[in-house]
Every structure is written in C-alpha cells, then in structure tokens.
Length: 161
Image (tube, one colour):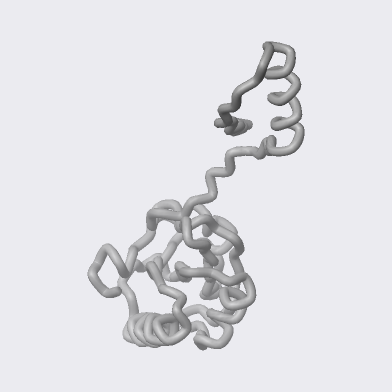
C-alpha cells in the first residue's frame, strides 16, 4: 500500500540541536500518516467496475454512489431491487443517505438483466426526476450508468443528463 507524508515547515534555530528538537516536536504535534486511497469515481467504467456485486443479477438493482466534493466515494447503497425488467425508484430513497452523509453529488447505476444497454422510457423519466430533485437539494446527479455483466452505458456520455 502507498502512504503519503507531507512536511513543509521552516523555522529558525540557534543550533543544529535546537533545530532537531524543534523539528521533532513539530512532527510529534502535526504528522499524520494515512494510506493513499484510490476511491475517486470519475468514469462510467469505474462505476461498472464498482458494480460487480449486482451487474449480473436476475432482478434490477438500483444503486447510488455517494460522493464528497472531491468525487471520492463516501458510501454506496442499493436503494431498490425490482423485477426482471423494472425497479421502483423514488428521490426520497435515492437522496436520504446523501443528505445524511452531507454529499455534494451522487452517481446512480442500475443493471439490466436482459443485457441490453438502451435506456427505457422509465429509465429516462426516473433520471429526469432524480436530476430535478437533486437540483432542489443541492446534490448533483453526475451520471446514471446502466450496467450489464459485460458492458455499461452512461447517460452523461449519451447527452441524456
């Protein structure tokens, strides 16, 4: 695993010993070591990769990825499991956790058990409703991605958002 350590501090000291002592004290007070986490969600392919748990399911699963201001995933939730070709989606369930987690954006994804990538009329309607609700809440819907076992389709890339 990669780690990141940042130290950028300049000071004056009367001797090298004093400088070492002040540096050690500064490090003890301010140093944080944390793993570098690659949890940015930037592309539909990454959404597809993050959707492996449901993309080949026999029923539609509707998932919301919750993002902070840097587009880092702060959570993920399946908000609806539907039937073979339909899922019941409501903005209330879609945005509930996003509000609790103080998210600035979401990406939604759902699988098509049929393997087709074309959005249905209902997919388009739900997406418009979510985008409108997100505007009211100040939580942007960045994309809606249809996933299948083999591929994916992005509403944003198709100009549908």
